[in-house]
Length: 368
Image 1 (cartoon, rainbow, N blue to C red):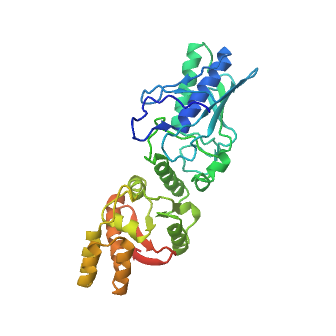
Image 2 (image 1 turned 60 degrees about the vertical axis):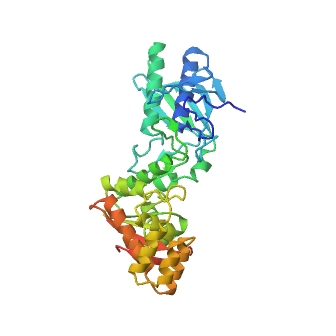
Image 3 (image 1 turned 90 degrees about the horizontal axis):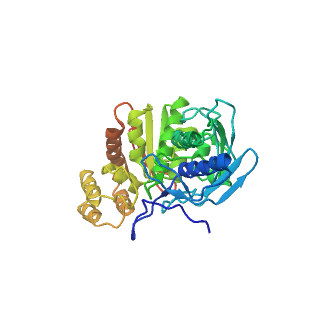
């Protein structure tokens, strides 16, 4: 088994262990390959400096040296984060480039290519994001100075099997074809920060804006996404897989507005938004049963319903009891959620909230 990179930020005891971004792995692989191209020897482990000053060391998983190129591979360790690329092999192949060209990036096997406007890279470029590019360029420049070399190189980043992994990400929807993106801003993966998911939300909004769309929809899951797409006849590019991160979507829209956004989800998650929660994950927010009880009372619900709502086990139970009394509870919660979301998104974005049941049937709506 390949050793993981030594992590100076590794947590102690039962705390979650941090890991390394794909960009950090690509930078380490590039450093190893370019060092071998200049000296004939691969450093192992290979140390890099991250943007915040950490100096992790990465064990080489693969390496090869030819006449005019060198390759090195690092196995990505994402720590305890549920990262689709955990365990993937990240390979950098370095060759001399034309004089004066600097660092030229190429997409190897499993790394995607940008095909739509709105991403932080031009159409046709390898999907190696700006921060990893800077890390790689700085690494190449430092080695070139150290060895009195010109620093003009072709750097091909590959992730074998990345095309299959990319199908589990947002890349196809964002217009990144053929593989994964090489991501990372700090080089460190913080467990369950879900920064990559929020990053994808932002890029989805950027792509929709660049395409001139004036209406997008953020959904908590696949059922609500399919239902809201059918409700509004939206193109796939307008669909934002926000998951639990409604705050991440709305805050970005405040600075990068579209004319209209629809927030779609089930009753329980939308009730959390109604209560002001911007992270709808069960581990980070809870249903406010007291609020649901008060709303039932405001709608004219029976004393029995109001009392039961305070001690109910699930939001779905309260909703069913309200339906039996013909109370528009889902509409009321949708309106509360719409008001909360509008406060976050700002006045330039018109917010609609729709609530669907588990079968995708519309049961609550506000701000249509």
